[in-house]
Length: 211
Image (tube, rainbow, N blue to C red; front, side, top):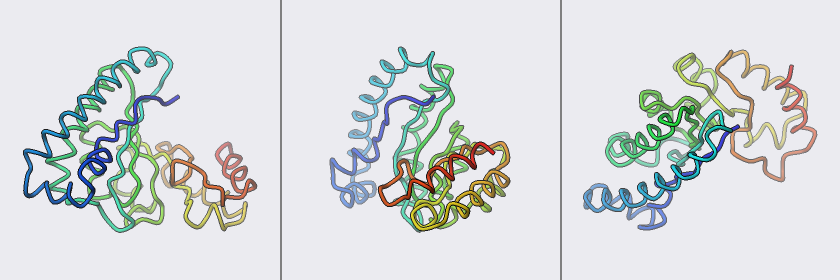
């Protein structure tokens, strides 16, 4: 079972400043960005501590997330990620590890450029593998990172699940399983199944996961 606070400090900063202003301030007012991020992350660290101190015995992993990618690449440069996001993510990861839990992290979009950084920071499970985003195809990820991190997701929700047949869904689940071997948890390539996904395809995914 997964649990924990979502800890979406990157999203909160986008809401607080406005996304474009937030990204611009990384260059024009870095000290302001750090000061505001510090306040937000401290809040999440405290709430996460309170939650996990009670829930940790019932969990196998703690889950947190920030959407860092677009369909084509990162929302910010890897250099800005290293300065304004990664250090605070490390604090959240270290807190979770300190409670004896695995770390599961969510980010939609094309985040291939920073996956080595996430592995180095201690992320154990990466979710959701936006299958149609650039460089997030299963072959690429399995070749580069197989055995280094567990992948949760990857069953395409942009085309396959809403428009494919149950047999196509089954075949894709089995293909992903074979590519990732033991480093894979079957799940859609988004954190939710939207209303346009036929029930038959949901059941096909579930049955294939049990084969």
